[in-house]
Amino acid sequence: MAERDWEQFHSPENLAKSVAIEAGELLECFQWDAAGDRDEVADELADVLTYALLLADRLDLDPEQIIRTKLKRTGEKYPVEKAKGRSTKYDRL
Image (tube, rainbow, N blue to C red; front, side):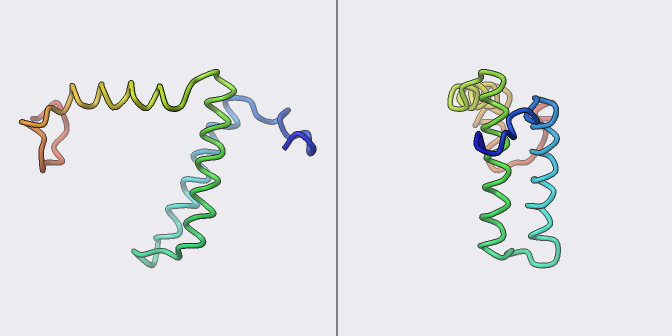
């Protein structure tokens, strides 16, 4: 990317928008076929992950650490004894 000078367009706002746009394109892979085309899915997932990682880098966030932190909070909101096998929102468990 440096050779194309695209970093100038990588504001947090633009990167967040790009994550959402690419996520929409990923979802489109499943619009008419629940299985999705594996190669198309891989391409769109790569785009989502790329923009997400660029955003984390731009905001000086460690992806592994923020995932661990979020999983910990999710575990607290959805204790196994209440949430196992259920899709009920945490405030209704």
